[in-house]
Picture 1: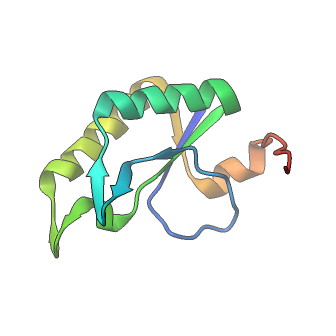
Picture 2: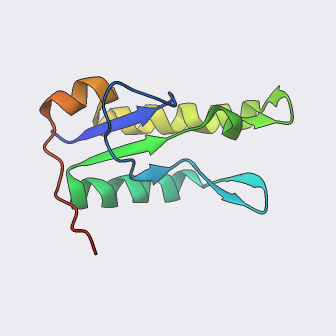
Amino acid sequence: MSHLMLSLRAYSHSYVPSTVDFTDYKNGTWQLKLLQQLLTEVNQSIQSYGYAMIVVHPQELMTGTQMNQSEVNILQDLIVKLSEEYSLTTNQKISKTLTLPQISQK
């Protein structure tokens, strides 16, 4: 079964490279990606690497100093949709079983 990891922590005990960003950072603001774009990126990552690591920064869910509920709802929808098809896990658990591809240095 393919694995999907959703990282909500800035640091973990091990390092698994992220493959999908929840938002794009442009012109000093976080711009939320559409749900379909996120799903496409997850599927491409799993096809390429055998896993997907989605990075979500807490500030991506904020508008100023307030939690943006609509963005939280999109994150929730993403988690629900992905959990229907994939096994969700943590960085720590997956790092014990996942063989990462070798990255060639240029």
